Amino acid sequence: MIVDVLIEDARWARAGLEPHAETAARAALMHLGLDPAAFEIAVLGCDDARIAVLNSDFRDKAQATNVLSWPSEDRSSGAPGDAPVPSIPGELGDIAIAYDTCAREAGDQGKSFEAHILHLLVHGVLHLLGYDHIDARDAARMEQLEVEILATLGVKDPY
Image 1 (spheres, rainbow, N blue to C red):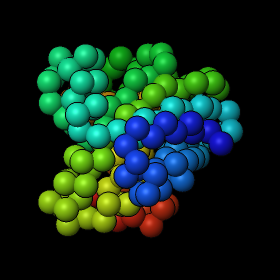
Image 2 (image 1 turned 60 degrees about the vertical axis):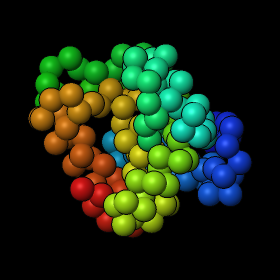
Image 3 (image 1 turned 90 degrees about the vertical axis):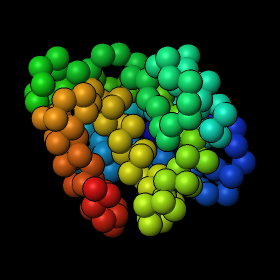
Image 4 (image 1 turned 30 degrees about the horizontal axis):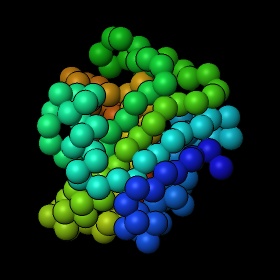
């Protein structure tokens, strides 16, 4: 398994976070031509209170969010619109995902919870690989990749 899941909120176990995280990570890596077996990702399934603390500690934003990611190294290309630097095998980094925010967003957006968390996990993996959405060009590129990867999983365009 390429994903090591730590569940702090038991609702994630019932929602199948572990297989969903593995599915999303494999799909993202394979879509980019990378061997999933060569990489490791840690995923934390938590609640809004925990992710708010993490968001405050690491981004100075004292509020809950849906997903956070911490790459093990900087893989960005540095130039807007350029592809991230290809990753060498090993540890890609960590992802935290909040149950409460994900459930609320899925309901508000009329999406299934499963489709929404697959999207957010793919989004997190792309961040670990160096993709970002700071400027419009990079955002469009990242969103297009997300749409393509999710289509391989039978998930419709989330945008």
